[in-house]
Image (cartoon, rainbow, N blue to C red; front, top):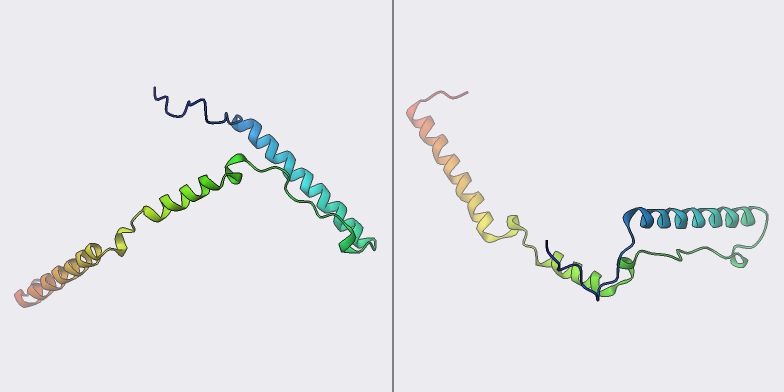
Length: 113
């Protein structure tokens, strides 16, 4: 089996179940804090005086700028084949071929449904 992802330099990721549990608890914490902020505003406290919660935890791949740069570079590298000249020529050739077949059918008198 490949050992390319089992390098000692790469940090060990948490198992998927633990990551999901951590993310769930973070979403719950933010929800509860937002409820307390809304309750404070509705009770008459000025919004500037209240602490608005932010996300204290993000998965590691959201923090790594190099990972984001690599993803952007890979995304830009992929060619969209329908934007290339070859693809447009191919489409034009197909349309010309269909037009030629239709004109020969009309000339020969073949009935198609």
